[in-house]
Amino acid sequence: MQNIEEIYNKYSKTVYKYIFCLSKDKEISEEIVQETFLVAVKDIDKFEGKCKISTWLCQIAKNIWYKNLRKEKRYKKIPIENITEKVLFEENIEDVICQKESKIQLFKKLQKLDEQTRNVIILRIFGDLSYEEIGEIMNKNSSWARVVYFRGKQKLKE
Image 1 (spheres, rainbow, N blue to C red):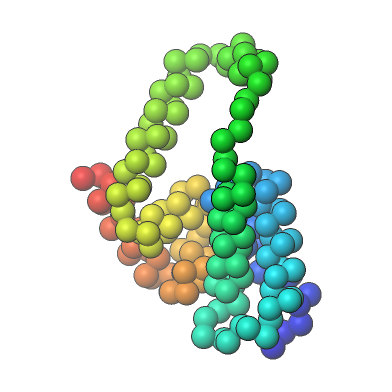
Image 2 (cartoon, rainbow, N blue to C red):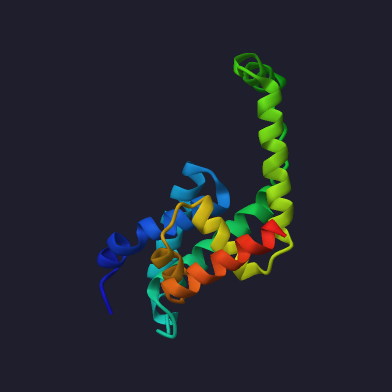
């Protein structure tokens, strides 16, 4: 077994990219990475070696993220000042609205896919991860990630 510093140096970026894909928030992602490695240090004896360390760490990070979501309930009130500032500084509000509409449609279509396909597409598009990195996170190979991504895109086009 590698020591925890080596594991951190090797896998912290992978865990960060994975969580950033889920949360879309830099600060939350950084906090979750730190918390993930705290849990990993505490529970290293529970790691059975049935999967890659990166997969185990990403699973821990995902569980922490879900736990944080349940705590926050994600319904925060946004002050009206923040909204008006954003509207005033946007060049073309119609474009912003159209972009948001198309994102909403994309996410609605993504929800109709199976979980693995959805995760691969999100990691590839929003996480900007390579097929090798996706394969490592999903405990598969890069060819599998490439095929799942391609098939998922085909389903989205339909």
